[in-house]
Every structure is written in C-alpha cells, then in structure tokens.
Image (cartoon, rainbow, N blue to C red; front, side, top):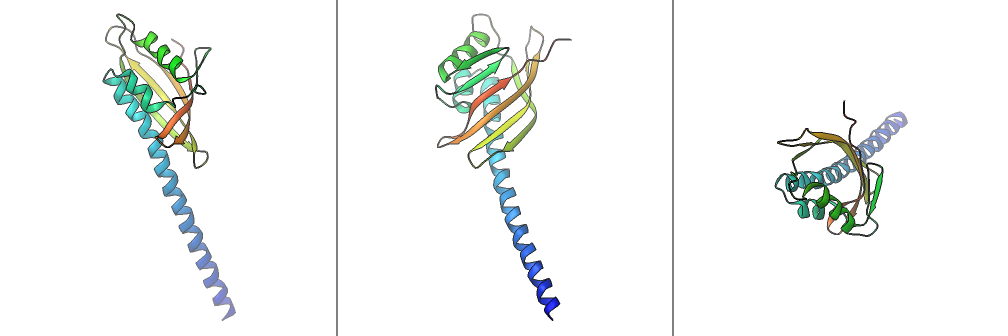
Length: 157
C-alpha cells in the first residue's frame, strides 16, 4: 500500500511537471512567433517599397539602438534610417526583393530574445546579395523591437 501511494505521488508530481513544462513551451512558442512576426512584417514592408515602415515596425526608436555591418557601427534610430535610405533609396537605386530564410528564435528571458537566419536581396538588374543576421530583440509596450542588429554580407564567389 505504501508503495502504491509513493507511485501515485510520483505520477502526480510528474504530471504537474509535464504541465508546467508544456505551459512554458507554449509561452515560449508564442513569444518566438511574435518575434518572427516582426521580421515578416519588415519583409512585407520592404517588398512594398516602404522603408519607413520597415524600420518603424522592427527597430526600437532609441539612441541606444545599434547596427553592426560591413565593419561599421551605427548607433541610434535616425542614423540607421538614414543609412538604409542612402544605401537603398538614393536616386536610381532599387530596393530589391527581400527574403528571410532559416529563421531561428531563441528566448533569453520574458523580455529579451534573439532572432537569427539568412537574408537575401534580389534585384532586377544587379546580382543578388545576401548573408547572415543576428537580431537582439526586446519586448516593449509596442511589441518586440530590435535593439541590436548584426548583419553580414556573404563573400562573393
């Protein structure tokens, strides 16, 4: 009889632990989906030629925002937007078609996470470019926002 009580207690504890793990998993999956939704919205904005929306839905409007790419560091929301405008919207420039693939999310805490993957820009006239990205995101009252972006361009072969 004592053995049966111990077995029932162990099963009850295991059941509670499984429920707690399952709840955490669902919560993490929801947060992962929310972070990925941000970059999917950016992808859509870019492909509609809306650079302002691309930046505003993805990046934290803060002087502490950082962007590392091509050996350069950009700090702040406005310099980041200007960098994108100069590179992709100057006279005669084509923004191209953006796609994110192999996207992975990692929840670090209830308010921080990482999104990483591959990016690719395809152009009508110029060769495609692409590379890797790692985004550190923070959950804000407006939703998940990028606070640090490290983007690399793959070497040409």
